[in-house]
Image (cartoon, rainbow over all chains, first blue to last red; front, side):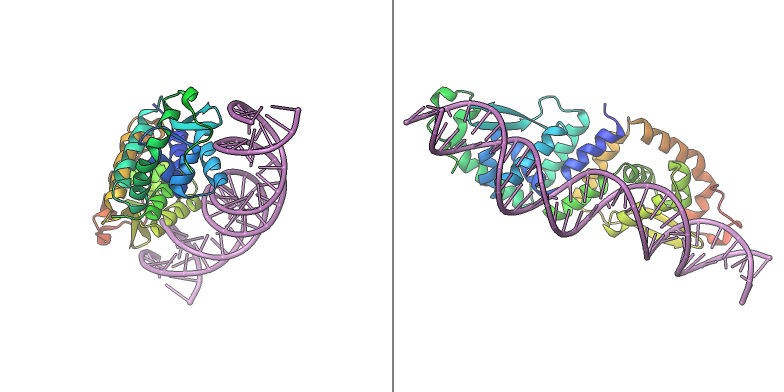
Length: 130
Length: 130
DNA sequence: AAACCATATTCTTATAACGGAATATGCTTC
DNA sequence: GAAGCATATTCCGTTATAAGAATATGGTTT
């Protein structure tokens, strides 16, 4: 159960093209920031600030893993958030930008699976995102 | 089928509390402006401007009927808009403000049904909204 | 045509958002 | 502990948004 203003906050998060792309990627699972940069092809500042925006409003959560920071959808989402994210996913299904992003993610993703595995012991000297 | 930016525009329409209330009312059917003022209890300028905002972005349509202007949801909505409106309605179901607005509408509505009926011939001297 | 009603527009002010450049932070490795 | 990497934050200019006051518009009634 959520108030009217919380609902507005959800929509505020959804009314920016970059944030929609981020959320579309996040729907596939947790991702580290460097992946976002790669997948979206947008500058670091832009990505970082929009992720912060989403974090402040409780849509996503972050966890540090050595040098990297992994973002994922917030663990406990309200029914309302959940519904709207589902709706977004359905809409994003057929829209080119989003499809392209998901495709790129799929290619890049395996190279960094260890990050999400939470096993930094196996980490190489640097992220293989680039 | 809709572009990324059109999707953003939809969400821009949804990220204001007053517009959410307007859309919640509109989901019940077409309504004339004076009803909106009554139901929401907000000043005329505010209502009028937010309705204009929604009209410019294609979410609603308006039709003049004598002195009054009737607003309704756009006749041909994209799948995406339709989906998001449905999602909004589901969310609005349990939120007090929206429930209250729907209740007030139900009380006021019959007194002006003739307006929507498109039969200005039967119109009385003034709208009974006030 | 003048008065009147419902609605729209203009003007103004305040506030928030976006983006980029530069810089700071936190870990890690050497 | 110094250098290096990934990410975050600050600063700044620009643009969009929201709200209210005042005024304009378009249609109707007398």
